[in-house]
Image 1: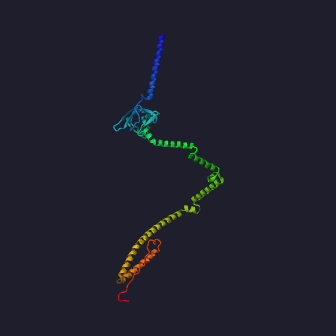
Image 2 (image 1 turned 180 degrees about the vertical axis):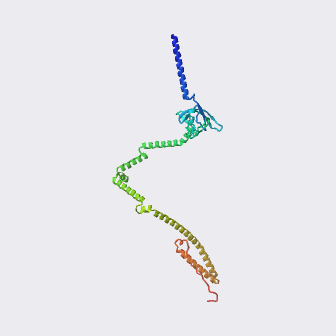
Image 3 (image 1 turned 180 degrees about the horizontal axis):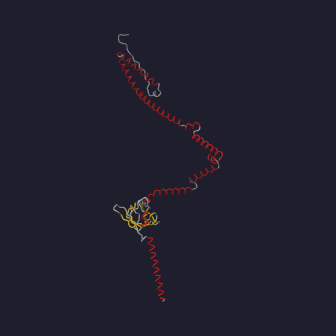
Length: 337
């Protein structure tokens, strides 16, 4: 009886242990989804950054599957095949994106999926999910290198500044001492800044002046007074615009007239030279050309009149040379007294 009793106790213990082990297996299997249905999907990366078979798949931060395989396709990209619990497959839609995430401080990788919107169609099993290339830690360090160098320079400068402050006769300590003296004088009411800060009467005068300035500006904006009327009167603005347009037209005409006068003045020296040559020829011609001399004198008189008129013009007076007078000597004809 005693032996049978012990056998019964041992048998019950073994059965309870097997039942507990079976329950644990069932619980673990349910947690791992061993007895649930999955849908398989694919995504493509240029660099999977250490993602491997068995890595977790997260959908909006929730573990919904795992990575099955990673393989290199003929184009040199990495094709990642993964499975997702069928009950979560409805969340994987055309606008879903896949990327590679980090898990913990040990650097484990996971495949992270974004939940798609209801406006887009679900991706069918064995479909392709659009990927977003992850940031490589090497690239991040390369980008951060210049900032780290600048930070090192700042730290070096701070160390140098603190060392300089520790020395009694340093320039930095002298500057701080002078700044302290200036602040003390201001607090004591010395100097212009001290009076502005500490003198209530001066502060009140300054505040009254600013109030008057604000009042004056406000009256100008409301169109009060002569200046306000001029600034806000539409008729005055229109007249001012018209006057400016007329002034511009007047200056344009004046510039054109000045250009014409300068061109005419530039031709006068050449005309003078030609007339002087003509007179010289007449002088050499002598007695046989009295009629031509008369014409030359007439032309010279007209030119002299023109030259005097130009000399009275202040714009061209400096550009026109003064003409020299010439005397034509005429000898009497032979046989006449």
